[in-house]
Image (cartoon, rainbow, N blue to C red; front, top):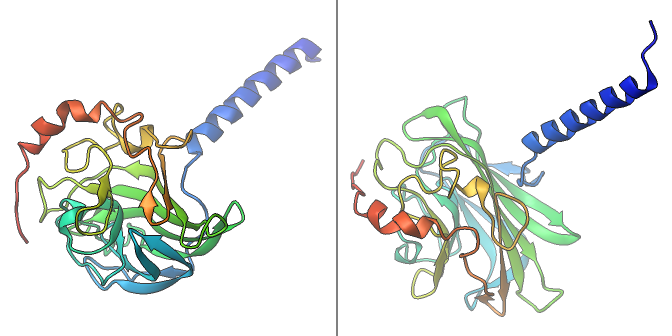
Length: 265
């Protein structure tokens, strides 16, 4: 029995549509690479000092070295072991935090934190991956996949840079020793200057289960869901700061903060 030409076209059309759908389902904003180095399987320490292939002007201070910390952040004035997240301007040092929370990679089912150099659109870049990482204490039943990419833009002016927060999976928000302390995401000079994504410190705001405000469903300065792009020029972040596609978070932010509970390990 021969298949008609029209049937063949129909089958091809369906197959193509399914392939596009599958490709869309597996697409991720997380860029490949940045895996040359890794932290050991650990809870809160040790951090690693890494040298970026360029120098950035971050709130008026120039840096080429960065501490890669296990708990979803990098710092520039020293390492950070802190596992209970809080407002980034309270940390007391220059920090960039895609997902400041209690990461624990000791479970073999968890990934480890990796970092390294690469390129983005022909610009030198430095990236850190917290991909498929678990949470304290030794849990890997739920995972986090996020990435920080710092991109050299000294072609515009010395010290200028862009950076990306990329999110593919956000299934947990605290560990056993930080219950009730939701993650914070953003950056700060540790003092008066800071930017945090709306939803920082708000229970449930960042999770994949929250289809309205979850990090993987929204974006900033990007058409890619789960991607948040910031540009620093002359040491200062350019507008707009986080607002687009995230306004709904403010509706329950104050209420969520009222229910925070504090525990210590």
